[in-house]
Length: 419
Image (cartoon, rainbow, N blue to C red):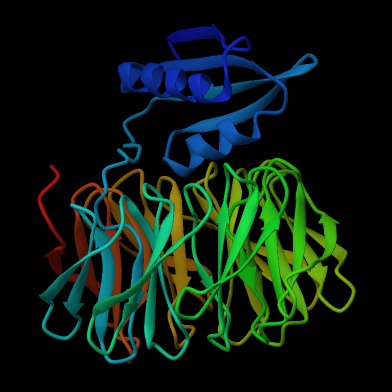
């Protein structure tokens, strides 16, 4: 039992003010053996997800007819929100892209680990995605409400296209013809052509998070965290084909390689919903851990994984039976993880403790824990799968990891020093 219990009643405040006050209290109490118990009223989806995404140690609890958010300000380090290296995109020719300071994207030669170029983009670039043929890089600019499109042959900007407010992770269709960008404030998804031409704005549910497109480009599935649903967008005419009820607080989605099933991580109900794409029906629910948020599948499609943000673990399930088969303990706040291209390893970033772990994907056991830069986040791999590249947001570095030797071989400075 913590020595210091701090009880707060924030139910009269707006959601944004609740989050700001909880962050302030948390930072003032870090390392002081305290627990914050905050009454917040109705089901606090936005508050909970916002705090989880930033790496605050938080849990959700019932409080009569309402809810409490419980926070433990331990020695872990929440993300600061500085605009350092966070999102990673690895080109098939070995170049590595990440967002960095001063509203730029940096280009790194993955083989020499040398910075090749900085590219000016929009305000507050947050997430990147390459087209599947590697010809274009899309940069979501959350501060200027647009997307920058870069021609990777020359690493020059070819277009800047408007989106909804504070666009989230861009998702490019496998055929390269379309890019989808959700907007939380606008409750919409902007659909653009490959070079930024406007196609449609599609209304979706409350607090849309990370949109996903099926590998056959037929469907875009938009999870709506505060509507507890997935909006199904038809990739041919951008109409809404269905609204699928899932668990509470859906955040991220992954499709199987054949586009038959989608796996939806539900952050507040701590589970994964399986949707059959043939008729957009939920066909199974897989139990996971606290704060289940980010799913992925093994390259052979046999196993699925979900990062449990509030439980410091990964849940593993069998894709044939939809049964959980293992829980893998990892470090503090596994913000991102990715299977290596050969399927041998899972690389997990621990944003709360500036480290990563390398997990044996066959035995479901951690094999190494390595120190990297501050607030490690997204992960990419070299074309041969020998190296992993980890964006470290608060120190604005890209950590380069040799997977065979399981060592960090370099920390590349992306832009201006932050700390």
